[in-house]
Amino acid sequence: IPLATLLCMLDDPYFPATQLWTLCFRAVQAEKKSCVTNMFSIMRARYRKLQELALYLSRPRDPKSVNPASDSDSDSEDEETPFVPWRSPERTETLQWKTLAPLDFPELTRLHLVHEYTLSISDEEAVVLAKTLPNLEVLELNPAPGNPNPGVPKLTLRCLYSFAQSLRQLHHLSVLLDATQTIESDTPVAVFQRLEKAFLCVSPIRIKDRDSVTLHLARLFPTTAVLTSERSYVSEWDYTPPVFESNRLAVWQDVERDLHLILNAKQDWLKDIRKH
Image (cartoon, rainbow, N blue to C red):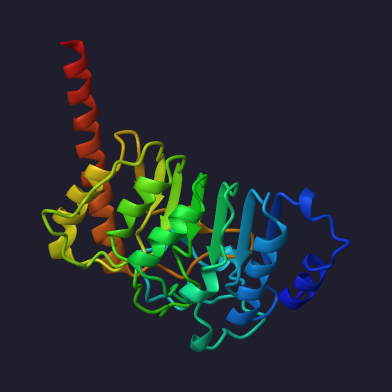
């Protein structure tokens, strides 16, 4: 059903608001950001006990049309043939901070948000988002947009500090950010307490930034955390992201490998310290 129809149900005074803990919505048409804002506003007013929210606004893409084994070959048209029953939304419908600001659910543990285009939110706005969702265990913040040219993210690696500091229960994180920003030596860090797996590999990154990004993540991640570049990790229902940009993916795979080695060495070092 269209989102507007769902909103009529959610706003119905006879709808059992106190008994709704999980809401998963799969778009069947291009939805306007004003409708998404209205949805969040209605839910903030009536559904304070919500624990899981999943909003899939990207066009469907048949997972069979994209061969996971061919991430490095983005030239094959067969791999890029999507199953798209409706047109992509206009770029003016990119979700902005004022669209997401009503996301204020203190008991929410899982948030999945997928859109055709990069979310237009800043690091400062991510601070506010994290503080209003303190019990999140899973955060999927549009990590692999449905459009092959989704736009440049405003979020940077600095937002990870806010997430680590405020989301103490978080164990799965998927986000699209700009990893080309210079990481200053005095950039604050806070270690994720329970992070198990993270997905960042669609994020813009340069070869020259590989080492600094790896070391920064090593300071943020617990020793048991894993950075993954698997497409299946961000594929849901009838949606799988476009073929990953090969050069960018190669850099992230190097980061993934190096980070694994650093965290393992750190774990062994901590074990030795405890023995003595």
